Length: 90
Image (cartoon, rainbow, N blue to C red; front, side, top):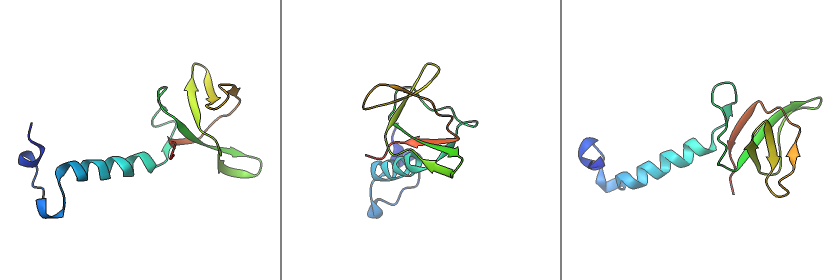
């Protein structure tokens, strides 16, 4: 499949590959509600939670595991109920 032939892409502004990677970067940075899209098991994640102090993002990468989430660095399960997630921005 020739991406450039299937879509009218102005080559003077960059290639279709550049456009694809720009769209993917934007999609990876957006917060996703957990009730609309379940976090994947295979990716490093940033989780947002709502606690007594209000909503905030966890400051360490997590990974989804059966029954919950773990802190990626220690592999220890963590007790969180995230409301949103996005791919960890390294």
